[in-house]
Length: 146
Image 1: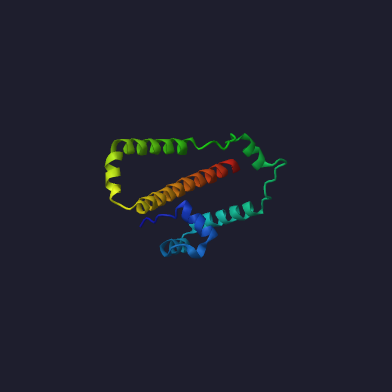
Image 2 (image 1 turned 90 degrees about the vertical axis):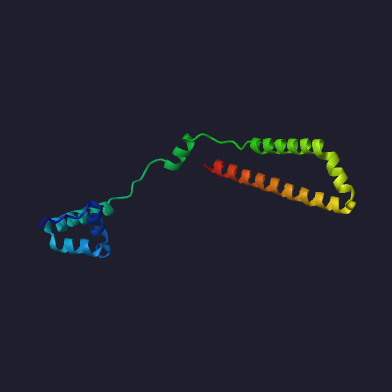
């Protein structure tokens, strides 16, 4: 009967975390001298690697890497401005084309109701614009930290 040996990954897991090895692999390891020897080799390797001193540089590695990255300057939110101009153009075109019809519709309504609806719409749009601007500034701050 041919038995397959443990994979390198399973051998490494057994060397570090023997109790976490699945039952079939643990049974094979218990009976196979070759796999036991490989696990012992990995254990020696892991022990030797743990004893190595931590690498020390005589320079600031993070500062050196960051100095080589391109500097991203915070820029004016051109995309947000372009969207605002586009929306303003669409609203202006809509009012130009359908302004007369809208005036007839709103003539029957109270002036206060129209003013209130306009104010609410204005506040909602202003809030959305401020939120977009805040997100843009936050993203630019994150980029400047890199």
